[in-house]
Length: 393
Image 1: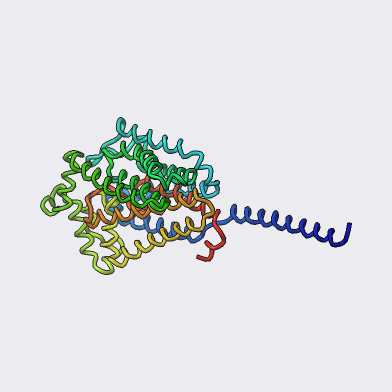
Image 2: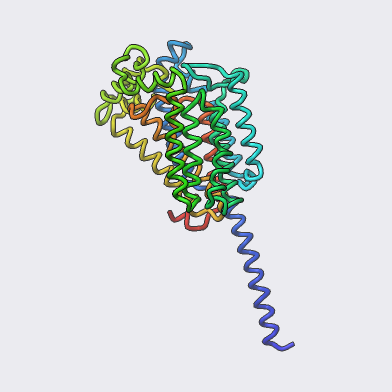
């Protein structure tokens, strides 16, 4: 064997070894990588949420339960569960969710059907299932389930996304989940349909289909309001003229608007809200009004900026992800966060009818917080499968 041939063989051997070592180092990096930017954003939002929840609910908690920490303790218990689920999912290979997309979807669909039979009613709608000492909202599971299913379908059938037939089939699969929720929880149906709409819009090149789908959706939404019963029509009337029924149906909206108007630029100070004693269930859907009263427009804008940075970070993870399934998982989560925040603030400012949408990480609600943390765990898992450029963003 000549010296030149031996050198070529050694060179090929060492190149092969370098590739093996590089792959192993990449795997180790992925398994140990943590997106600290996303984690920091979650800490800030959760910390702010607990602070405002205590400020908003301490008085009503003391008057009802004899101590100021009832709502904080209950929210904290779900936060602990959520953190455990988030870190467990962050360590898991998110690709496993693709194989579980249909079981998760069927579980969510079954929960919404059980809600129609065994659901607990409150404030004119049935949204909760009683499981022992706690009440859960199957609709919160539905939002995450539809993200996983849509991401799976897009990644497994990318060509169908650019065909009318495929778009119709994808949409029908998701509408089967939204339909049982529509009767009692129109806001969740809007979010579910919105998540699917924007995920498919981003994935598809067939733009005309979405124009027609938007027109059809607008027509169906109008029909749902008109023929959805007196309860929904009453909400529309209250939305248009809350001052005409300020002592009854429009009471919550008017008190929230008073809170926003009295906050000024920098607010009255933390814990100094007066309107929180008059806003029904202020710690739930209307907590943004108390934030604006206590921290002013300045505090409200800071919170909105935090949400925008969160959505931006999720978008970066989706862009740098190395596979289609992971990208669209995080796109779906980002769309969900955006729709949820937008709808909540729109309701509080009376820019749209009251729909009962919570403010992520801030509003009181165990099911919503738990499922939001689960989605963040999925996003952290996907962030491990991104290119090196994400660290520099």
